[in-house]
Image (cartoon, rainbow, N blue to C red; front, side, top):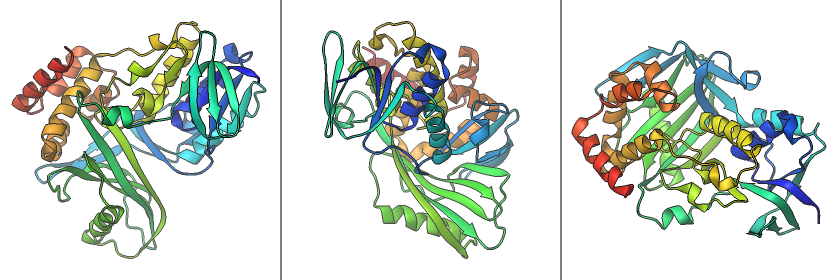
Length: 382
């Protein structure tokens, strides 16, 4: 049995971002790397969006970008110019193609289609057991997510960002494709945090996602009924649905890094790479994968990689608020955008602010609600 230097379990965003960085770094040219998944990704199964300035790492595969954004609830609506930021959109197939085209040029990469059953570690290696074969490596990087540990703990609040989206096409030009709707809270909240997320990609095409931050999922038909109602209320009746997508993203400050060992590292959502308070994944994963590949070159034990920063605590506070007062999400996010510059919010949510700039953003939120949540969060650190 061949022993690899690294095995990457999972060919989703985190696994392929890490592979992409390894393939672009000459330090890994003499390292053998295996990617294993039960199904290697090759189609549009995800839509990733993120904000950053004009020149970014993945400019060549952007499918759309916007410089203007809408956010609103029943008390407040506004359209913001995001300069110098753009809100950028990537379809997953374009990303998958980019990575696979690169690693196809690398003789040190191997791809396997297999379903993983288990793995065991010893002093020198990790043995991975698949249904088709067994594999061994010095180090294992896995993005396979098992929600059991998260579900069976009660220390940290756990919400889900869940959604269903329709890509629709209309015969007539109905959409202003210069404006993205981040969060349209004008829909009925039903004692949850609910909003419509709208990405117009042309005057005749747009993605509409009915999204919730809550504990429980809905029946699929409910999401679709709400999308249809939203379109009808805006006079959009003559259209066809070209694609559908759905998702369920965990929102929690649970210590995912507690399961890491000297030879096994959980990455992606399984490793806590998803931004806990918003569910945003792409930009966080871009940064985390870059940090990880630099870390691997130090030859330190893998369980030394993950570090908490102050943003983990900020996320914990907001999740405490949304967990206890989920019906106030529209109010809270409305205040966040109403009382802060959108650029400051982006820097804050990208975890790139100073302590002073972070404080300015947070002080605009309902003080007593967040003070109580802060004490609850502090108690969890004990």
